[in-house]
Length: 86
Image (cartoon, rainbow, N blue to C red; front, side, top):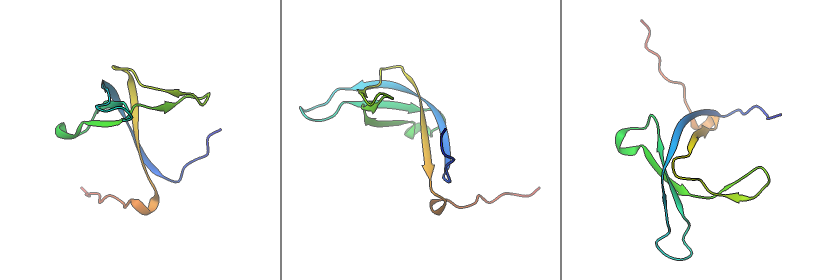
């Protein structure tokens, strides 16, 4: 069973738009990920295309894969939103 986290978070749907081969030997392959809900100029992020599966083996994302991006922050890194009363 997963422990409850004391951190605030949001999870957004995303998709792997393309796989970027390294420009030089020794550099990692990158996955360009389109995050749904991001501002138009900032919808894509690039990350090393290396994940670990449940068996502990290294795996990589495929182009077109549906993924989720989670942003998580501790309580010290967040503040209450101001709510407008009506």
